Length: 210
Image (cartoon, rainbow, N blue to C red):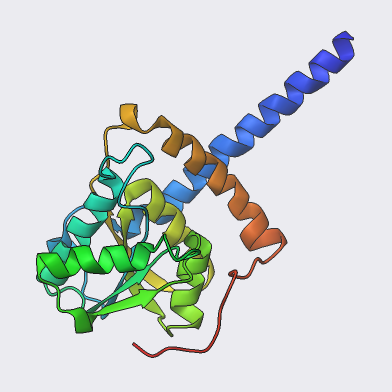
């Protein structure tokens, strides 16, 4: 019995070490490509805005969504990008992240013709790979919260892309601990996606020129 307890304990320590190690490795990899202010970031023709719901399950406004919209607008307003690629989930007719982002940015003053929608950005890997393979981007500025940007930059870098990222404002960690835990697990899952199974996006389709 003690032998099994020891083995389970050792396995738990190894798994925890893997999670922590992968989390910090991804952060270190992306560190030099992250920017806090739009005015400091180099100019690139297209910015990729990663999608999320505009509302929480309780009906309240999603602060992650609002932060990304504000940063995307700041990026465009400062002339750092000419176009914004809005990538998110549109898996049902009742849930449309790209369209919601588009409406929010138009309200802020971004012309509709400078907004390009990617309806098949079901997860971060899909959004980044599709930006490269479907929309033909070899360089771009990613817009999301810092923890999310780090993972997206890591994916893009391993695809050979040149990317920067603008960190959107994040809610206080105390109100989003589940998001942090999910991010830790997502970074471990990158091992399977990028280095073991070479996972493809759920949907690619024909090339689209921006």
